[in-house]
Length: 321
Image (cartoon, rainbow, N blue to C red):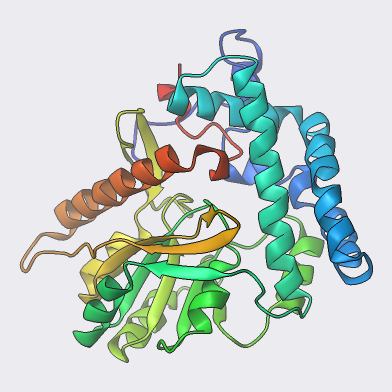
């Protein structure tokens, strides 16, 4: 985060009735019941033992449970959606409930695959020509995605296509039990690495790009101090990961924003046109510009799918109303 852009803490917000107590960072939100090992064990047991029809019927109950059990997360969702849609209660509360429901459905879709089920969702790719042209350049491609739609499941669908190998860069779960569960369920269709675990990770990712491979990173979860506060459409400023832009500058590979929303019961793989570092562009200027362009693309995506936007913390921070 840039100097002078520190956010108010949850404790500071709690004493201000204008600013309700909500998670102020992704790591705070991930310590909720939504991300616990117990919830994941229950989910996996249900996916393996409960008929699919009953699984689907139970999802509104799970959504209602979390709506009631994690009020700080619920308030964060409402805060973000109000900024995005300008809605007010009760429409805002209903939108928050639908966000919980969409989250439960997307996680269930992903964990069915984690638990060994085949890829069952129908899928269609929009913008595949952008990725094909980028790969033809021979520098690989950086896929910058976000916590929108079925981002957990999207890489499996990419890996199931005739594409180069993909490496996904993730942040470890704050709950060690949840981390072990996730790591134990992943199969060999993609390689997962963790951003905080290897000082030489950047070198490895550049080597993979030079071999024409794919590298996937999250644009909306800055970690390790590698975030920039930039404009997010017309909604205010927010912190975005500078990792995709940093890797693009150091490797010469293009960055393609990619999102995995659910549309009419099917997975839409939406690939946006590539973003590039200009020849001779200074590192700081290139990273700032490209991160801002990613944020603009992100803003358009969350405007289109507000109830599939899974940012369970105060995304806009000090800029929020």
